[in-house]
Each structure stands twice: as structure tokens, then as C-alpha cells.
Length: 462
Image 1 (spheres, rainbow, N blue to C red):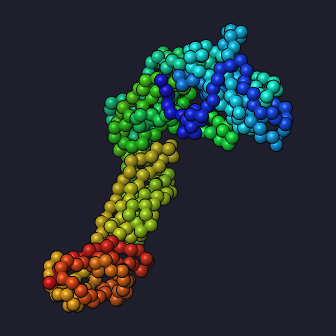
Image 2: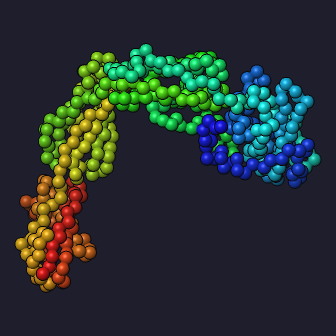
Image 3: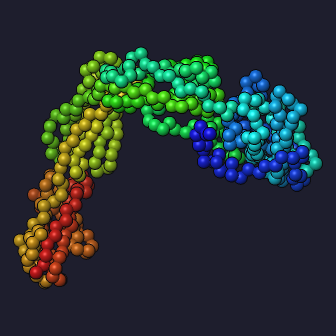
């Protein structure tokens, strides 16, 4: 059983551990200084607890990694060292096992494992580390205490909400208050939740310099985790759903070893709360700059004032972009946009309330054909005419304003750019050197440097 994949760096370390169970460590080469007690002690990629009354709870299904940084009094000596780990049940200190790791670099974590079959579920163990160099050994470290917990919480949590009842429509605008309960599982330490399924794996630690773990506290992420008010207790969270309509929160309990329970789902419905989008010009031409006014959903505004809008535009010449617009006291806001997407302008807008509520998106779209028109009397589009060696004139005409040039290529010839006249048109002459199928591909460029959509014009030379 696993409660989630460990980070890649941790997995890589697991593949390189050297393990032996012995009474003494294999001698490392002689070193120049005196061995020092290992530091940076970790177990299961979590911090060592030196308090016997507050052990670290660990799942031992994949064994338990123990580690510490060995060293000597000579910081310039990089001769390999060994590390000896001793482990014993707190209830029976006379039953001691020794795990060793040989030939590790001073200053780097020396990892070894306590086999899972050595560790009994529900038992508390102490372990300590000692640096070994040849026949010399450091003092032992202070003991670290771990309690093995290989059993998942016995029941899935219960989930209730006083302001968004399940399986019915609710007016959006207030964060959803959820109460999460251990449901009789007396070892639950907290809860993990998400608006999506499956829930993400729990990352225990990142691996830093010299292989030193940097343990993560999952409960430092209030968007996905919360501690119970007591072991086996409950917790209350206020969450903003990601959208209106049908919404499901997925929740599972976590014990002190981060073993997960089965998952509970809580489904409810939220009435959509999008703002309205009103352009000053409802049908702006390509290249126009026009003002857009955003107004909040009335029911949303009455619950908590809208303080701003997030505007996301698609299809512009510089790619998609997102920007914020602050709202006035009445929740409205105005911003100007230049309509310059080569296939049209597309935007979505969400409002943000003072209490953190984010509305559903409102959408506004306008489509344009920015390809040029191509015409030729001698070589009509999708028709035939002329002949090999017979010149033809091709006229490019814009569908939008502001065109200053055209870039074209006949068949596979190099591209050529020609300036547009005052009326935005341009004409070019071209003489085919063979009969059969031919074509010209052309796009226009505006005075602001926007490269518009390309058009392919095909014809047959008689």
C-alpha cells in the first residue's frame, strides 16, 4: 500500500542504497581527522524526532530510509566514511539490530534502509547513527523515535456544508463552508481535499544539496490540506469552487503517517455568476480600439462587492494575454482593447469579490477574415488560362484596413514583399514556365507590423 509517489529525486536515491545487516561496518579507508557524529538525521524523508513522547509516524510498506551526514574533524579530507545505524524497539531496548552503509562521501547524506519486515505495525522504535572510519568511530547520535503505522484509517471521512446543501442548486457568492470529520477513525490527523479526482500524490520531501532532504509539510498548503482539531477529530474549511454548475469536492482522511482513507465525495450545484461584457461599439472593425464595460452579477454583488476583473484575450498578434482591471465601488469596470486578432478577438472575463469568490467566465467574440483577396484575369482562381510563358497580373486586395504590404510566393519560389498602394491594394506580374497546377500564397502586413492570415490561390496553366 502506498499513499502516493515520492519525488523523483527520492526514488532515484532508493535505487542506489547499500544495505547490510551486521555487527560491525566494513572498514572505510583511513582518514586524516577524527570521525564526528552524523548530523542531518532523517527517517522516511521526514525530520528526526528526538522526543520519545512525540515520535515520527511512518509507513514501512516500502521499508524505512534512515540517513545522516557523516564527517570528520578534518574538513579538507574527502576520504570515504562508513555509517552504522542501530535500531531497537523502545519496549525492548535489548533487541538491537544494526544496519550499515559503507564508503560514502563526507558531508553527504549516507542513506540506508530499515527493512519493513524488521518493523512491526503499531510499535515505536528508536534509532541512532555513528560515523566509522577504519577502526575509529564517533560518538552515537541522539536517538530518533519513529512509530510504525501500516494501517489506513478505518473509515472514509464525512463531509457536510451548512451553506451549500448537497444535491441541490445554491446561489453562488459566498465561500463554501465544509466540515470534515474523521467518522470514527481515531487515528486521523488531517484531511486532503480537491475539486478534481484522483487526489494528487503526497510529496514527502525535495532533495537538496548533498542529498539532504527538505521535508514538506502537506498542511502548509491550505488549498488542499487541513489538520484535524484533534487526533480523530474534525476540521472546517472555507473554499471557493472552481466554477458554477455541478461541483464535487473529493476528501480523504490522513493518519499521522499520511496513510489515506477511502475517498468521500460531496456533490452540490452552484448557480452561475458571470459578469456582463458590453463593448462601446458592438461591431468594431479590425484594428479599432474600443471600450469594454464589465458589470457584476447582481446577486453576487449583493453578497460581497466585486473588486476586480481578470481579462483573458485570445488570438492577438502577441499571443494570449491576461490582465486585471480594478472595479469601482459599484462593481463595474471599464478598459480599452485594440481589436487586432488575425482571425478575430476572443476574450473571457471573470470577476473577483472581496471575499475571494471568483465568478464563472463571461465571453465575448468577434470573428474576422483578414486574408487578402487575390484576382487575376489571365489565371482565374480554381480555373485555367494563359499558358507557359504567358504573363499574368495578380491583384491583392485587403479585407481590413491598415494594410501596407503583401508578402507572396508562387509555387516554391522565395518569398517577395511588395508595398501596398494608398488604397491598400497591390498588383504583381508573374510568368509561369510550365503548364499544369500552380498557386500563389500571400499574406498582408499592417502598419503596426501585424502579419495577417495567409491565403492560397490555386489555378491551372493551359
